[in-house]
Image (tube, rainbow, N blue to C red; front, side):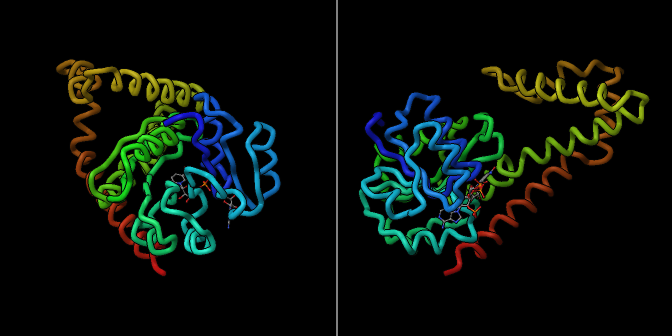
Length: 271
Ligand SMILES: NC(=O)c1ccc[n+]([C@@H]2O[C@H](COP(=O)([O-])OP(=O)(O)OC[C@H]3O[C@@H](n4cnc5c(N)ncnc54)[C@H](OP(=O)(O)O)[C@@H]3O)[C@@H](O)[C@H]2O)c1
């Protein structure tokens, strides 16, 4: 990966804005970044940063090395069939649920990396699962990793079907944590705290626990055991969670999300 790589985003919405800002922050030259979008406001926000903007997708991809497909899944088929992409150009699709086979059919290319990012990418704190088509070179894999690393961590998966599991764990994952936070804030309020205090206690605890759990070598189960004194308050709370089969509920919830991801792939991937 070098600074001469020209990256063109098709669609300049939330995710493309984050990717382009992340790439600029990582030192990628603005002169090598492009975006196309029908929305003038989205283009203007990027133009202010020195990114070349277009209202014509064909003009945006001319001569680009990497094309990031960052439109909604519902419009991706129409966007792709109107583009002439050469096999030399790496396609990175971040569209949730759209199968690689469909993108291959719509573009006629097999130089494709399909990704599943998540919402914290908007704060450069995301995590993305990536899957490469068989024709993707080592150099193009590195390019894809460079692009997605601009908004957080990037992890390769070996099977496209694993992206359904990625969707269930990290794609939808932020909502699970938000839901737990909501429940803890409600519970803290029920115990007599004012809402602002309950919220501050919950959010800083979530942040601190995440920081501890992501230390090198840390393990969630060990950390939980370390803060659970026998006969103490934490143990009493965890016993209630186990009685309600929290672990089983989470397992069933993620299986349902993965199943929905497979259904969406059939809907979005249809010709
Ligand atoms: N946001 C996330 O956290 C997240 C997470 C995982 C995956 N993704 C995926 O990332 C993709 C983009 O999501 P987003 O949240 O950035 O969506 P978004 O904010 O709606 O951005 C999409 C942009 O593409 C524009 N667009 C529509 N048709 C176009 C066309 N023919 N040519 C060029 N641009 C066109 C849209 O304009 P209009 O508004 O006029 O339609 C909009 O500005 C989606 O496929 C989504 O599945 C997003």
